[in-house]
Image (cartoon, rainbow, N blue to C red; front, side, top):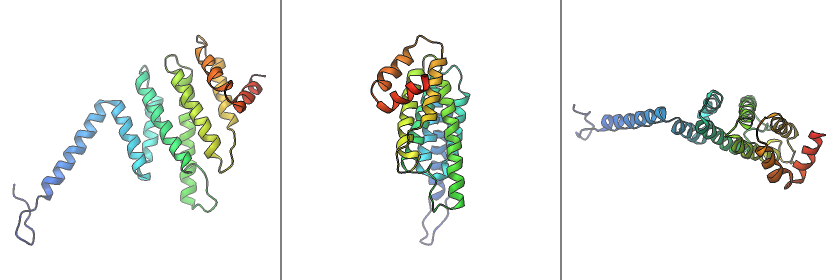
Amino acid sequence: MPGTVDQAGQLSKRKRVASKEKASKRARSESSDEDPQAQILLLENEIFESKANYNNITKLVKILQGVKDDGDTSIVSAISLCRVFTRLMVSGELTKKPTGSEKEVVLVRWLRERYMEYKAALLILLGEEGVESTALTLCMRLLKTEGEHLYGENYNFPVPFLMDIIRVLLETENDGSTRLEFSQKFVEEYDDIRFYTFEAIE
């Protein structure tokens, strides 16, 4: 099929290039549909590329909430969301700015709601056998980032989140390995975690 003729009288190949781009996008989309983990990483990368893709956060949360009997996919989605929310907290995207516009205030509120959904799903993973150790690591990483970045410039220990973590650890019926890991890696190592943990248990 002939291309369009430009002013210099030469054939333009723009249509062919466009079709190649579409084919490439279609191939990438099809491969991610077949592989849930590839789809998760694609959604994550798009979030980092543009704020226009923030709705991908909802998709990732739904993937995490909807995963059953697939520990690999649930962990990949949980790790992906941890990277997303950690970066958003560090960059101040989850913090209300005094001079922020109404649109920015709405966005911060929306992001915080998604963050709460993510933490709730992560706490469920913390109580599930086979993935609880990774879930604990992610919870504690978020706890640290929250304290340093979510509440403005001043450090503010996120007591409610720690209480939720401790509650799940105490209520979960398993061999106690996750509780031991929490004690050895965090309670014995960090004064603030030790203080609030003992306060919660008492």
